[in-house]
Image (cartoon, rainbow, N blue to C red; front, side, top):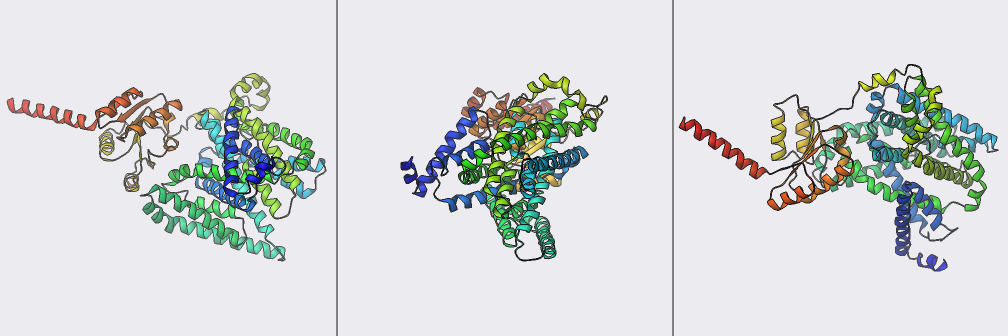
Amino acid sequence: MEWLSNLAENPFFEFAIILTLAALLGALGQILKQPLIVMFIALGILVGPDVLDVVQSEENIHLLAEIGIAILLFIVGLKLDLRLIKSTGKIALLTGLGQVIFTSVIGYFIGIGLGFSALHSFYIAVALTFSSTIIIVKLLSDKKEIDSLHGQIAIGFLIVQDIVVILVMIVLSAIGSGGDTTLAQDVFQTVLYSVLLVILTIVSMRYILPGISFYLAKSQELLSLFAIAWAIFLAALSDYIGFSAEVGAFLAGVSLASSPFKDSIGTRLVSLRDFLLLFFFVHLGSTLDLALIGQQIPAAFLFSIFVLIGNPIIVLVIMGRMGYRKRTAFLAGLTVAQISEFSLIFAGLGLQVGHINEEIVGLITLVGLITIALSTYLILYSHQIYSFIHPALSIFEKKDPYRESQKEDEKPEKFDLVILGLGRFGSRIAKSLDFHPEVSYMGVDYNPEVVKEYQSKGKKIVYGDVEDPDIIEVIPYSRVAYIVSTIPNAEQSMALIKTLRSKGYKGKIFLTAMEEKDYQKLEACGADEILQPPKMAAENFYNNFLKNIEEIES
């Protein structure tokens, strides 16, 4: 493959080769039902010096990787909803912390038993504690279990894990930047800079960002650009004062977490995050020494078995003791049977500060490949697995699993219908529904002025644009009987109904057509009702006219 390596000396061809192979491996991963993370790490090894030796522009790839990590942490902060932890009660906190403590302690002693040093064992153990929020949310969403009890609990303790990993990275980055200073100076400097960053985040959140984001939201492209700029700016500032760039990016996301536009920002940046993270995994895989990884296979399998079995068991124990049914505990427990992209970022940071070597990074990466690949199938076929082994799980369940009945009373917020677009037509529909308080509705609109107006009236409305392919993410379609789109664009309406039906939506879909040709298109694509404002207005006039005629004649 020397010719391929020579071709890759041109940066344009180098990136063309990498992206082409990424697409091919991604397609293979889809066939194998594997997350892109697994395929991207494999891609990094494939294009690395031990195989195809395609990677030549290491500095460029490393820069893109750093930006990708910053965007990842920004989105984590953006979607950090502490109310979710509160809504799932103390189970999220206890399960999250319990799993972190159990895995790190037992993992540490396993590392010591295998002959690793105390510091290396610490890094391995901590890396084993983090589960992949991205993968779990994606799999639960695909299975339509994100709103289930076990799904909500899983998301709750994943948020706890995210908070823990951020705290660990803050401490690690502070220690790594210590230089010749004393421990007391390191502690003082860390506390001081932490306070300054938190103050900057709070001030920005309360006094600066709301006005800026509201003004920029008139253009979604400009809003997204500003969000990226803000994330990279705080990441650079954090790196400059001695923390890791990841901490600054995370705080940038937190500062926008209360914005009404956070869902729109998040959904638009997901694709960019996935694209840039490709280069993180390419960079990681290309720096791995296959000879060193080969030496770590026995240890990697042992740690992988521990993660695949030990993590779900501790969740089963904690949730069982708290009164949850074995089925709920088992399904939630399977979501932590892997390590995450954060584990690899954490290992990379340890390598950067000189605490671990490439051998340990290779070991953690191999554990990631094994656990992510296998846990994907465990989650996809969780119900079939439970049906097979549920008799053996009775030891984890109390005789009276009382929590389930209490939790069932705390239903997620439900609506009778969702109105997409609150312009002239949509606002009239909403105004008509306001005369019927027994009917609950949620609105979605792309105009920040409209969003602000309805929210000031106490109405449930979120910011979103039907042109956005990820608009489905802000619609609680699993909990509404009717979805009404007032957008008079036939192509967008056809894409919407196709997406909703592919997601398994069984309710009624009302679409809007302004012209007869659009009516025929929407009728053919399976809309339950097609609203025609001009025709409805004419019929309303006609009915009122007849009524007035009858009154005059009488």
